[in-house]
Length: 211
Image 1 (cartoon, rainbow, N blue to C red):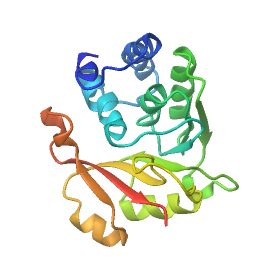
Image 2 (cartoon, rainbow, N blue to C red):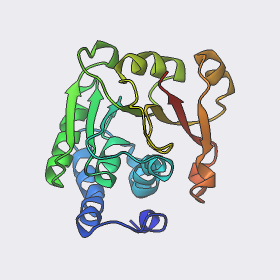
Image 3 (cartoon, helix red, strand yellow):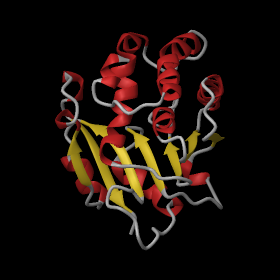
Image 4 (cartoon, rainbow, N blue to C red):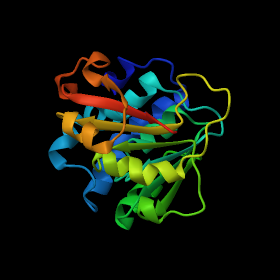
């Protein structure tokens, strides 16, 4: 938790309790359903929670916005973001149902009221629109944008520059070829400029605005 409070200080007592409960919950669930690499559990808050909250350093999700976490796995970045933005509605989607069991039970255990889940592939979702889509390294940018674009509603006329209407994703490594092949022109931030830990070298935050 110290690595979180080093960079974020304006948590309510409830948010601190929710964040503080996450590691034990995930450790327990990980013995039943492997959603996090076991060697990663020692760095749970840095590698998973803080990494997810990199999005919150640059963007804010406002009251009643609807955000989809595409390929949420065990709930990242969706669960940390739902704690950080309690008035935003987060819809966590994954094609592996047992991972969604973990997401649902973790959200229930910490009292998150702004999280829903759906067992589906993103390309199979019909009749839903979201203000933004978030994702963490689940597929090439070309595919993420292809799946996300039809699900993002047209942005309202007046929004702050820090309120995203598009795809926000966390990625790592050399992204030059991947960005070229996507046909997108994303805004890119180096996460190591946000967080000093070595883990964040060559990790990036990308934003593709809806067009």
